[in-house]
Length: 351
Ligand code: ATP
Ligand code: FE
Image (cartoon, rainbow, N blue to C red; front, top):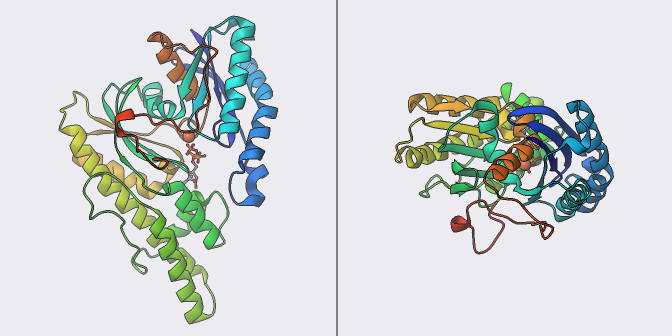
């Protein structure tokens, strides 16, 4: 079937067309320049931009796919979790299209979109272990089916991408912080500054990253107080130490998650990493080595499909369509929507 996917839950307006497993088009319109001056995504600005850009994104996705809109068999749309204004824009657009074209609509969990992407790109079979690590998320999932996820743990505060972005801001490096911190770290000495390795003493797969930013701030201020300024080598060393801490924590928690996953004796053990932070070379290398040591296949979808996009939403929608899981006009936009209900926290965002 031909599936149109729509994504507008954060700061990317995206539309894509899939024919089965084949990505015919995937349009992603970022909003970075709109939010740049504010040092973070401003929900009201994001919502208005999604409402303005969705039409164009859909038009381009249809044109690049070489089809006409009425040929679409179904519309898949992110119905949460995310910034409510943006999610609402997408859901309303999907309802309009579904009603206008007389085609079914499928509400998709954004996290399920990320979690199922390795099946689209690498044909992984269930169950596989996934680490979703981005600007907004950090969690370990055993993916057992299109609607069957077990959450093994996740961050109790910031996501690593957020930590990279804040570090860049504190050190005067450009946004997005991940790539600029990684670049600086390459010229730095990771042993000069000793960053904490949060939550390693606690059992399980939960992670914490907010303390790293506090540690960084303290070290930066100490250097400035002692030397009267921050030099390039100091900055590189700080980045290297910070990145090493994130790498080590992710590697150790992945080791624990792998142990839980492997205890189930999966037929074809596989680990997939997704999200913007998966682009980090040091983190990738550590996790690749870890998987090799456990005879687990390591995969990472290409970056354009593991950061926010609509192809993953169309794919997840297609899987739900196969299972007969259609939405009706009562589909609502959900700011919070944990994948694994049993593991959902009673309080807090649980992201
Ligand atoms: P979501 O969390 O909803 O998936 P997002 O836009 O916050 O969306 P992504 O687009 O997946 O997240 O990823 C962006 C994040 O990835 C940013 O925080 C960015 O700093 C980080 N990132 C990108 N490249 C690197 C890198 N090389 N090293 C570390 N972090 C990186
Ligand atoms: Fe995302």
